[in-house]
Image 1 (cartoon, rainbow, N blue to C red):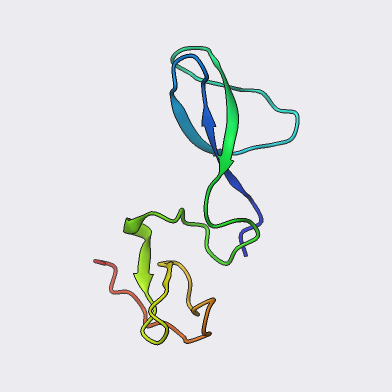
Image 2 (image 1 turned 45 degrees about the vertical axis):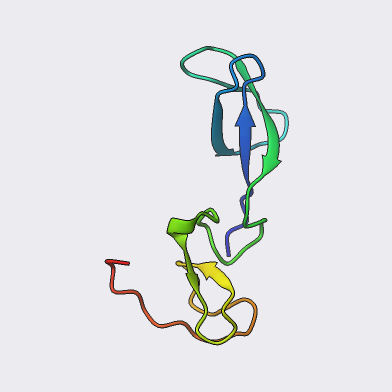
Length: 91
């Protein structure tokens, strides 16, 4: 179970973005511009989640039974409970 929530951080003036877990009260600064970055949204999956991978096409596969998109690092489909086959490492 992954308890950490990942946020999309954005620097208002430059528009530069980063993805990182956010701690309450912490200040996040862009290394290149020195500009303060602010959390603008949470990313999927929402914490707590069985998957630690962001929901992007490269990190998803389709469940054989219910045809829902699930994370590559999840053994059982969170929608129907079907155990997923092991990946060969090249997928």
